Image 1 (cartoon, helix red, strand yellow):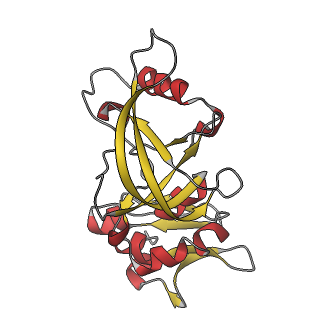
Image 2 (cartoon, rainbow, N blue to C red; image 1 turned 90 degrees about the vertical axis):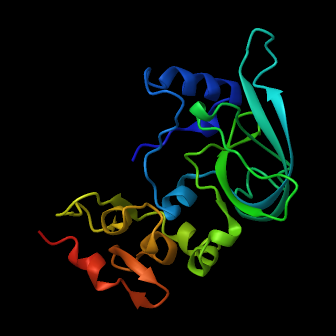
Length: 224
């Protein structure tokens, strides 16, 4: 799956690119390529747990002719899982104001905590959108919470391939088949919530839940 190098862009340029690349005729909607939580963590520059203190609509740039707007969320960072080398204590995260540009709506002034994944732009601002993995902390499974500390990061050399229809096959030994959509008709099903694609010493990747092997129906799905 291709991933855009948002970290090398300014936040105003990101907004302009999203607007230019959005296909005409699709209406007010945001479309994202599917990605397993492990992929989100591996491809994000920043992964944190946080509470949202407040929000404010701000200009996307200092150019008076630029009509684009951003939402600036003031956050209270609880824990950082990734991004130590680029950010220490994140105070604000930015997202497009328009939902058609994948802007994220978060609850403010509540006890709800979020897992936030995103990119760090060239000006140091943290940019998030709906194509990132952004979930209420309480909705994460125990395996997901534990994997944020180690397993996701340590296994970024594994590739996760989404399976939409049988037969599904892998083309390399470092691939794992992600079958939630096929089996449950939803992306973040049992496999996303409870399994990690882990690499063995021989370079082969396979699904693991702690010390347990993958459930049999996930293995059978690769057979014609």
